[in-house]
Image (cartoon, rainbow, N blue to C red; front, side, top):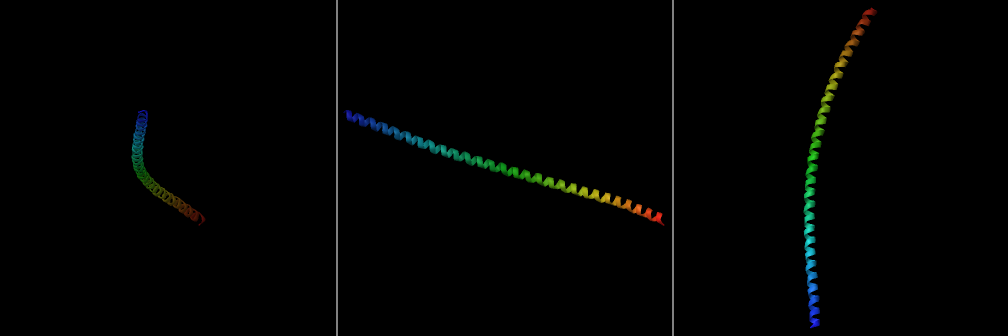
Length: 102
């Protein structure tokens, strides 16, 4: 009888160990799935944020290019006007010098 009790105790301990190991395996599987889902969500959010940032950067670059173009046109116009004024002054000076030489 003592032997049967020992065998029963060993079987009980073995079955408890088996149950606990299966429970741990299920917990590990669930944790892995949860981690995979969280990683997928984070990657999706990061990708979206990167896409939005790229669009904003492109818009900013386009606006800066337009502003540079406008500034260049205004600068060119200013240089043209000053050149005409200087040229006109030089022509007047030359005419006066020519008149004085005559």
